[in-house]
Length: 245
Image 1 (cartoon, rainbow, N blue to C red):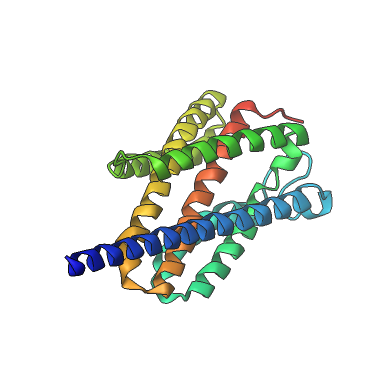
Image 2 (cartoon, one colour):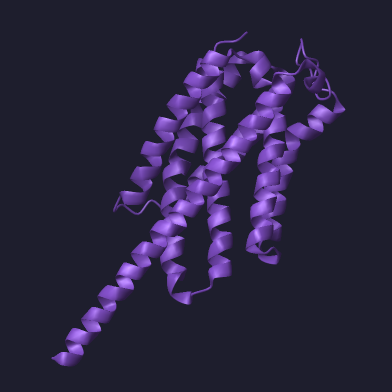
């Protein structure tokens, strides 16, 4: 009986340690994501509010992109693929630095919104996105429902959005853009819940390994995924509800 009580005590202590570790892990994920978001919007505002800086990438009046503008526009997508390929060769500190560089480059690619949309509408859409993201992420973290099956369907939806968005750059169809925006909000809302649950489950599956370096990189990758969910949901909502200058 004494051995049984000891085993139960050890199991309870271990469960408590995992719960505390999970909270610390999720705090790191959200903290890293938040710093990335601040960096992105700081860079975007600094460039977007300066006609001189904006002219490096786009015409400040028509917003037509030059060659450097096209490079900056597609650079974040290339960096996401590069990050996925390099993550195993990077240290946790290197992965974090890469993420912050990525966030700054994303800020350059989004700087045009501060010319195209009013500051008030950007702030309002950001607030709506923040509230929606928080609710969806909380649901993904707390739900007992296994939503891992959503992954393949949602990723296929993201690929479809990327292809449709690239095509519509040349077509310039408002109707297609409206449809893309609606689908984009729904897909990235689903991904917010899915990614949050996946981050939690990944930690629980590897918490016993004690590999702090791997868990550190997993937190950065989780922050990147949630960051992308937020940014994309924000941009699609801005296309739908933002007031243009």
